[in-house]
Image (cartoon, rainbow, N blue to C red; front, side, top):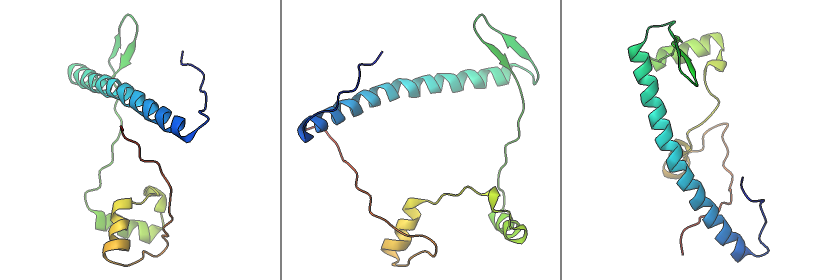
Length: 128
């Protein structure tokens, strides 16, 4: 169980604790990524080895091979025309690509209608 969080009294202490906390998270993240790779390999093995509808009972876990639909856009122009014609914008995610907007704002000097920029403060931390 993790120790209770004790907030430092100084900015120097906060900097050191931020660095240590980030390093700890990055170490844990490496383990998570390896586990995720193992999980993906095991899922691929089971889907290749078993039939749809098959149930596999292990000592601790139970797996069932099921099917689901995955949608792939083959023609974006046709999709955009469909969305505009039927006003079904819920098909799209409501997100923008920051790097693409940065090109429009900074390199092309053109603001994008309906999009504004704001300054966000953040902390950059590295080893001393």
